[in-house]
Length: 165
Image (cartoon, rainbow, N blue to C red):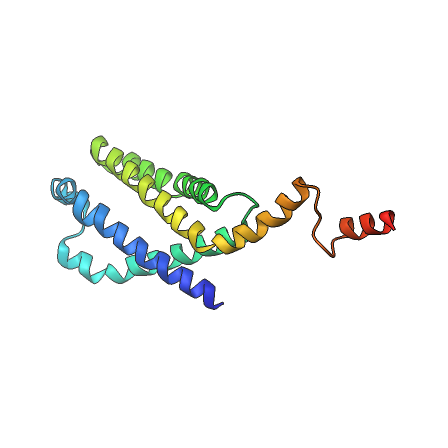
């Protein structure tokens, strides 16, 4: 549980930092050009807690889902694949849906989608890095089996030892 909370906290902080960089800095001018589509700054400030709740739940889900599907593959590749899958499941459809129902300029939506891809890939890589130990542990039996060495205590190793005796 302690590792989960630590991983959650790191991803929560990363989500806030990336969200600020993308939406508060990189897209600030684009958003200023379309004020009719956004809350006023005062209204946004009053609703900020909902964004924090969203980042908190997203970070928890990312840690939970990733930790449930660690494979016996290198952690970096897993993080990239996970990031792409999360982006395709969340950011891509969300921004395309917003584009379909709100009059966002296409160039802004393209920037949002692109920046979110980078952000979610980084989140996937960070998440995978936080799970490196479990990824390495999952790789050991696969490597050993590929080399003809079976882990002690498995049915296969016991059967081999009995057959060799």
